[in-house]
Structure formats: structure tokens, C-alpha cells
Length: 296
Image (tube, rainbow, N blue to C red):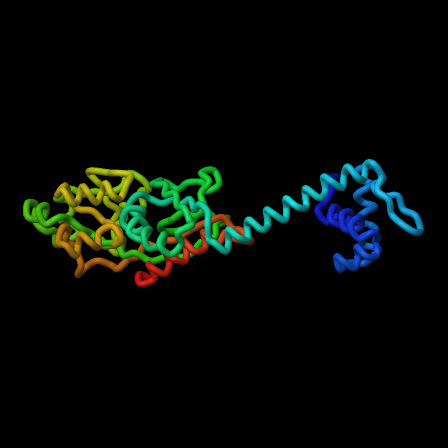
């Protein structure tokens, strides 16, 4: 069985104070507790560290050797704790963030400069995965997840709820006509996702059920689907954060606004449950949440 920090601390404090009684007073513990800690340590090491007499304690040769090593361990621990505390105060260190490419490009990237101005000692690594990843395997501090959460081992912070729009470019609609009903979509080129396929369920109903389209052109990336729509290839359904600027600028046109059922996609920041979440990660999550709160 390995020695504990408490046992090492008891041993060093006894030596420094010259007695078990004074060591107990220094550490705020009972004399019997300190004595037992020393005894456990000697039993684990199978050596006598201190020769005890009624008048004094004397280090053995083994005790002298172990004292030097114990001091180094305790000093290294104190330095490590100080470094972490300083890092926390300075809010320094690296944050690894993972998200689908569209959210990185349209939401995170425009906010990065402001975040870095507030916390200049924090470093950020942005990684793009359009599929759900294992945070531990990819050494990720926080990931952005869309829709219903599956992994109960993750802690989640709701960032925003992004409305879904059915859209097409004005050029496409001029060439193909504007669909007026769900049935009209069969005469159009539909754009969607190769995976996850639930993204091909659109917020408009036929026979009291949301329709699930069979896209003629599929992509695994929402930004690719957006670009296809902008280039007049077809009609698609995308989240507000992807198309709001295009709608305002007239590059895309919203369809079925009089028929669409307002449907929102929950967007969460997720991370593994920790008793003490690094402050830099907490700051980043709260920063995103504050900027996106208007969409809740």
C-alpha cells in the first residue's frame, strides 16, 4: 500500500517540530491521530523512521533519506497547487472546442475576437466534426450538440433554440416556381443530409405528420447544403443560425411561412461531469450562453 500525503505531512511536521504533540498542534489534529499516521507510514515502508525515547525523537538513517524525498514531494505538491490557483486567477490555458462546421463558421468564429479580448490568456483550439464524437477520446473540453441529447454521462448547458426554415434562392424559385403546398415539393429538387437522417424531417405537415423528405442531393455538412441552396440547386430546411443573414440579405427566401409549424432545434454545450470544471471552460460556455440568450 502506498504512502499518503497526510502520512508524509505528519512525518515531516513531527521532525520539524521535534515532537508528536507539537506536530499535532501545528496540524490541528489529535496527538493519537498523528502518532497513528507515523505508525502506518513505518508499517507500509517496513522501516523505523524515528527512534522514540521519553525525551526526544531521533531520525534513523532510513528516516533521513525518506525525509528528503518527503520534503520534495510536499514542496512539489504545493508548487503544483499554486500554479493551478494562479492559472485559475489569470484564466489561462487551452480550451478544445468541437462542433459541426456550420456552427463554428456562423456562430463561434464571429464571437472569438470579443472572447479573446476579454480573456487574452486563454488559448482556443476549434475542431470540426459533423458527427458526434467521444470527448475523452478526442481530448475535447466542450462540444456543441444539436437536438436531443443521447449521452447521459455528459453535463449540458442549453445555449439557444434555433428555429428551422424551409428556404431556396430567388433564382431557383424564379426558374422552378414557388411551391404553395407540400404536394408541390414533389416537383422540386430537394436538398438534405446524408446523416443524421432525422435532419430531413421538415417542420411542415402532411396528413397531420411532419414530412420526411428524400433529398435528391445529400451532404453530411450543413454548410455544404447551404451553399447548394445559395447556388440555386434546390430547396432545403436549415437552422436559423445558418440562414438568418442570407434571409435578411435576400440571398435566400423562406417558404411556407403561412403553413410552417414553428419548430426549434435545441443547441447545447456539453462536457464531462467534473466536480471542478476548469474556470476557462466555464467562462467560454457562459460567454456563448450570454451571446445566444436572445434565441432562448
